[in-house]
Length: 304
Image (tube, rainbow, N blue to C red; front, side, top):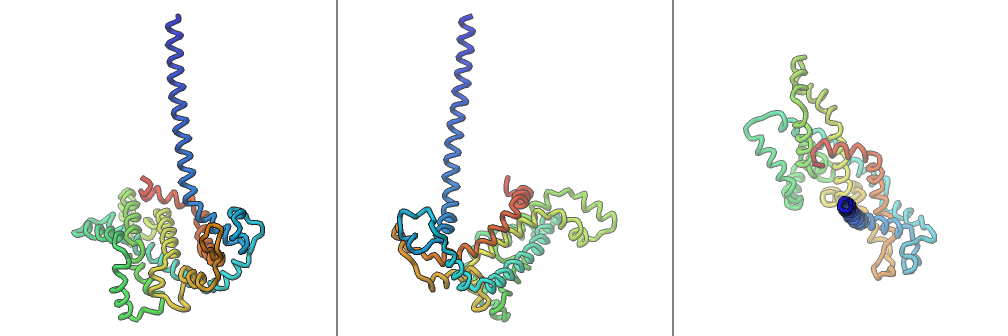
């Protein structure tokens, strides 16, 4: 009897140790995740807090993480100096035009590579993937000369037109996403449509594209974000009245005063407010389409 009780106690003790160890491991993981998340959240906290401060609050070390009085004038100045509505219009033209081009061209390319086997298809797909590791700066000079020869400079064409050819920012990635999705669909959809007399174009437009709406959303969000945040290409091709929001941040920073903070670094509250105005539309778009975006990521295979 005593031996049985002793055996039960040892079993319970082993179980308790197992769960206590698991509990400790979970606590450590959660602490690390919180610290990791804070690394990404901190810049936004810093951006929001300092963009709403007055000069004296930035200098005061005791008010580094608090706001005693909100200064909306920083945002008023940033809105004016950004020429916000005109710059926003230019940004939307670039973003929406490029996104539309990428969705159309990359969905066609992805469908062709997923469904049609022809000589050189593997090479074409490999070249599309290779484009992801080539820095845009290596191509800027020949592209600039080419666009100049076609009299495309001084317009939005150097940024928008390549997207309709599957080129431009991350075009290879979008082709990969569409290809992975179309490969996951059964061929029976096309076979049934062919029996009904549908052409390949009609099958693609009426069946394949509606089925790929989650992938279209993912590609659209990624394309919007990358083109919205891009500075290199717009600063090369767009000048003067065609400038987009990201190009204007530098001029705002150079035309407004900086204040020495308590940490010793110089802070430009108006420039921080300008950054907040630039990224605010993206934050709103992400929160609206967050659920659909994550579902689309799972369908495309990036989450595996």
